[in-house]
Amino acid sequence: MDRRRALALLGLGAAAPARGALARDRISFQHGVGSGDPLQDRVILWTRITQRGSDDDVAFRWRLDPLDRKGGGKHGSGVTGPDRDFTVKVDVVNLDPGRAYSFQFECGGVASPVGLTHTLPDGPTKDVVLAFCTCALFPNGYFNAYGAIARLPRVDAIVHLGDYIYEYGGPGSYGMDSAVAGERPHDPGHECVSLADYRRRHAQYKTDPQLQAAHARAPWIVVWDDHETANDSWVGGAENHQPATEGDWNVRKAAAIKAYYEWMPIREPAGGGFAINRSFDFGDVASLFMLETRLTARDHQLYPDAEMPRDPTPADVAAWRRRLGDPARKMMSAGQEAWLARGLAASVASGTPWQVLGNEVVMARLFTPPVHRYMTPEAYAAARAELPRAAQARLAKLEAYAALGLPWGADMWDGYPADRQRLYALVQKARANLIVMSGDSHAFWANELFDAETGGHRVAVEFGTAGITSPGPGEPYPTIPLGEAFARHNREVLFNNQTAKGFVLLTLTHTSATGELIAVSSIKDRAFTTRPLATYRATPGPNGVSALKPV
Image (tube, rainbow, N blue to C red):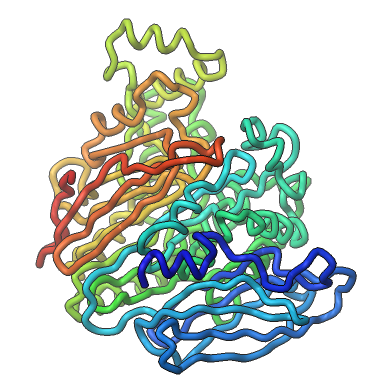
């Protein structure tokens, strides 16, 4: 489908206003429409019905029509109510592969906005275009990157790698120091803990017109990260969960995931739970594997600050590294490893050139860079002197971590090196051409992944996407080239930007994979432009993916 026709159906790239929906209407579709988890023969359709003055169940109708108007449309009806927060999710089956559709809901004589979706292709396919995004902090800025995705000339699926919402809330909370926070405060105005809290937060996000436009533009494929529950979550808790005041973690986690399943266009696992590992075959070009590494098996993070003395000795660091490298430490369960191994092997055996991993956190080895080493002494001293006291303290901590040779993040795969090696072994055994697509870090990355700290073999390439609006780690140091320091200090990092916001556009053909790191010019101004900060390309081979080359 060409860009002109897509944008016309969506109302110039935004979700079109519901026909017949007036302020006096009892029924409205305030949260837009969306679709997700497309397969060759089915797709999820989603919306939410707002019913004024009643909490009773409400009936709805839906229809899905092929854009080619050659027959094969579907329609149906159902009922939703307060047990699922009046959200609607329909798994439409028996569809044709590789076909584009429009869809719409109706309730009480009021029509929803129109959405666009399509099924996955089957068999010979020329190419695939995917947009990868992550980390949208509502108060911190406008969702311009979502608007940019909605206006892309072509996008076959939008892949969200987590932190779709944030749980924080209240005055002084994360993002509330933004220039636009006054018009975009958290709702509810406190941290999300209960089911009602998480539902309200999801509802707030889906009132954003640019996010609605992106949901209406193409099917989404999603995985959660930590903030859909609480910061730095793991199986048994989270950094931002205090049992003494916030109750049982399992209760909070279940509430957060119930709201997520209600409000996201995801095909829920049979029997519920957290097993949202899924795969998607884009014809004979690529297989996409969505890997959940937060709530299924992840062990507690071993943060250096919490696990070592304030001024650690080399012996302290060595002991910490031994604990970090314990083979028993997990991000994936044995079942997840077996699922991924089978999927990679089957994809390679079918002749599919690309295997893509939708991955929550950065996988590359990232040593904290000694920033001063990559600046002249004069420039470093001047840059440091311009910083506020709090930023100076953070810079000093960064330099101290670098001096000790510590990794950038214990919450990333660097915090679970033995499990990373197990994953690499699966990739090598399958002879997969793996592209790892990563979120979480609020930074752009182009990385090459090796199976050893020195020497070894290239196992995969990795593109990391910056956040939609979440603050970049380099923002406190505006005159210090943190991204450049990462690239110069780390063997696996070819490119890094620690301040930009945007998304990664991945174009796959039988002979190449091209990743464009696309930045928006502003998140504080509704008017914005986009530009690629960097573009890299790789090619598939019989023994694994090639090196990344700048384009």
